[in-house]
Figure 1 (cartoon, one colour):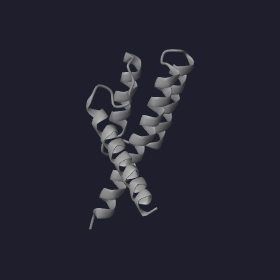
Figure 2 (cartoon, rainbow, N blue to C red):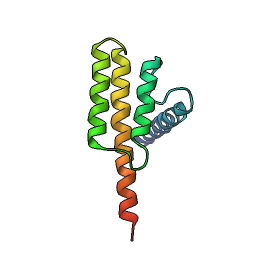
Figure 3 (cartoon, helix red, strand yellow):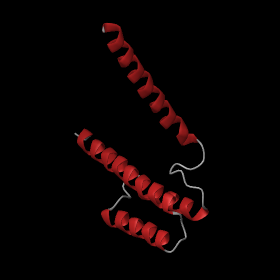
Figure 4 (cartoon, rainbow, N blue to C red):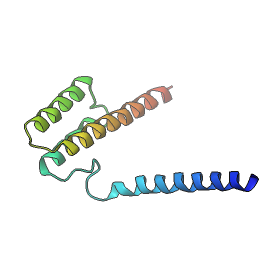
Length: 108
């Protein structure tokens, strides 16, 4: 029983490490949001620009989210790309806000 528990723990650790490696090494290839169309790549660039230091605003987030949804409804980007872009917008926004808050709390 002791060996089975150790084996299960080892499998979980190996799985977690391999998942982490898979996620971190995928960022260097092509698109960060995982999109292929030129229209979707333009949105990806806009998201990256929005989330740079000091440029993020709530209104900018809402406008970009609405713009992505409108383009998806019009059929200019695929539904899968819409989902990827919305998730990318959310995660990059969270990262940007976290970094801003972290800098603010490090001030003297």
